[in-house]
Length: 484
Image 1 (cartoon, rainbow, N blue to C red):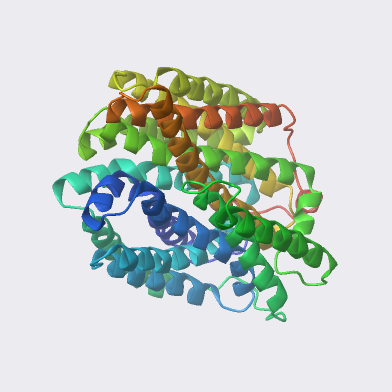
Image 2 (image 1 turned 90 degrees about the horizontal axis):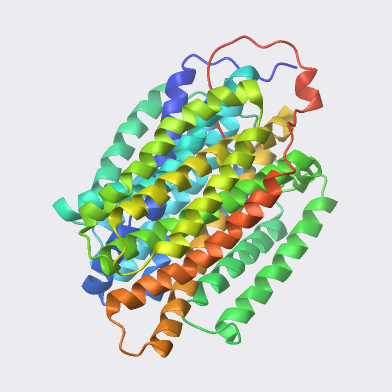
């Protein structure tokens, strides 16, 4: 069985899928730099404002597993064009928003479009490019996954300072229009339409499971875990996820095939991806607030201070992708995990209200140097172990957990940030606002540092994993790269 499907324009299809997903992932964190502006303009507190990010990720976490089912009911063209058009409507809606509620609705609509595009991109690119080029393409795809949310604060900082935060959405809208026009001409159908029976119980359990879990984590920023607002949705979420998992394992045609987790390296790679995304989104919401409100940089300068870290990501991704094909994953994930641990230890050690900007730049560059070496090899090695018939299920499971990680990272970071501030104020009642905010950010980075320790431990168990079925497949013709 050949794992590559020939299409007329694989490069253009890849560009449409990658760039459309990039805009959506950029949207995850694009408003982080504008949160203080939005809080002032619409008179909302940080715990409420963070729902612009958490709500976006919540929708992705709910929709991505359902999209595995959508790919069996709708053609590639329908899903790609539909995802772009829905994203366009959401971006326009958000750009025109007169109040916080309308802005949040626009974000949710845009997230629905992104939730359709992410798994389609993953599945399609695994099919249209040959196996032996997968490392290179996964490098590019890893860049999309990490650079989108990481570059959000940097680009949006410049946009906010020069044009205003609504233009984040206007610029996205223009790009969505252009991509949609290209997609109408160039996207080909490559998915197999089987139209399986829709198991509505699975859809409901998935929605309440992921939704309840993330809602509880986000609510912890403004309420104690003993509050019904927190423990009730948390309990509902956990029970629903357990029932969802049991149901999937018993079904002949599950909505999300959890049997992909029977492949050890897929499970380990997905876990490392989960932790990586969690750290990226935590840093992505903490650092913009810290640079703007504790060190008192403008949005543009704060964004530019994060640019060197993003540049490291851009440079390293294709290099790691190329070297992965030669050396495999183990050496990269171990070294990368060590570098991430060093970077987070620096953040947790040096963050104060008077920290020199260069120290944050160095720590952020180290952070993304390590992240790049962990994320792409983990993702590629995980998916390499799956046979072709499990690509869609594997990518759906991985992307679902990635979105849960992003939402959890954002929610937990804000919760610990708030707790750290309260603790600091209790100990130092005369502290200034920048000192209090810096203390909250530093406190949250203790958690991120702990996550990086777990990531390092997991990296020690990584070994090269290849699907037996793929190894037995017929030789493939070289064409070009792949993704997630």
